[in-house]
Length: 234
Image 1 (cartoon, helix red, strand yellow):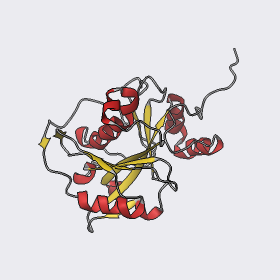
Image 2 (cartoon, rainbow, N blue to C red):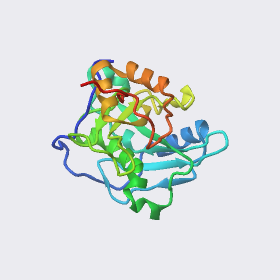
Image 3 (cartoon, rainbow, N blue to C red):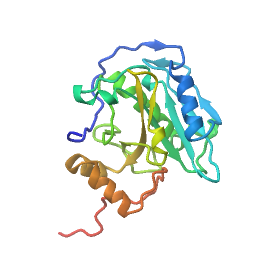
Image 4 (spheres, helix red, strand yellow):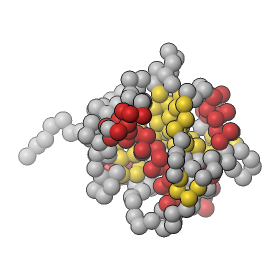
């Protein structure tokens, strides 16, 4: 891929467009999730949708997969504005994995410390359609400019997209028809220093840091910073 993209919020290029119907790919996505991950225990439905109707399908933890898996549907209802040589990435959905003790009751989501990963999926699913851009592997989307922590319980401030490596390769893509192939991307929050490493050197060195520090791809709001300097010299 080309130089990593750091996609910032700029002036919106698309007008508000109310969407009331569920995703046209809903059944196919749900069947795909059930086949490769597990049957969703619940679906987080949007009440008011702009541009695309984004639902989040929640697969509960099991002994074999001891974490929540949250997968969007709706992002792929519109093609993204990809460069000509990246047509294979025109359609996408995003997902995130949360620890088994993550607060998942709606009443608990009034606290942004519990809700921000869910909000992040919604923001990312709508982002390329709002700003006429695209999301692909290695892309980062900072939380503001300059990037601010997502909530009071973490210092991470940027979303990093990777193939969903916790899932079997057969899950990574879903062919709807010859023209529509949906790519699924895992969302991994980053610290600012990790974002800078990715932008300067690409996703390979950052993933090497993840391996070196045994960074879990299940969200850990207190995980070590893979680029934190341990010693400072004056």
